[in-house]
View 1 (cartoon, rainbow, N blue to C red):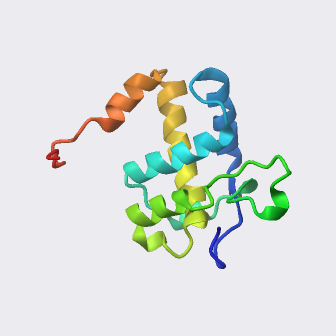
View 2 (view 1 turned 30 degrees about the vertical axis):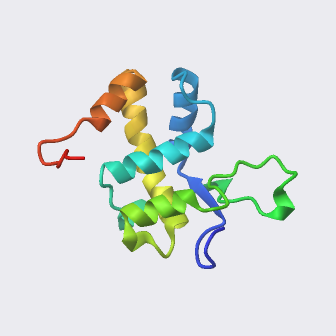
Length: 146
């Protein structure tokens, strides 16, 4: 469940919403907007994106509930996170400074990640396999020992 000071609903910018629609129309691997939101967060974290004041000034439109409460179990509302808070835990693990409000920060991370995903899969027309190979390839500075 969302922390008391964090958001119960999260949103995206108009551009990110358009990019999600575009990806869903053109890339056959994705079926749901919420999945693209989660991918966006993960990609931004993997790329080391830092939330800036400029990012926080964007106008956001609420789109997803963080987690569905008992009163919403019968409604068809997209739930973004598990009851255990897996998305929040991932954000806290990779960016401890966002620990107090991971869902609020997730909005900006998702926008950055969705933009990158859109550029690679739609604009640059990479297929998902190429994209993942590029994302997962170790850099010279990474320690690849297991």
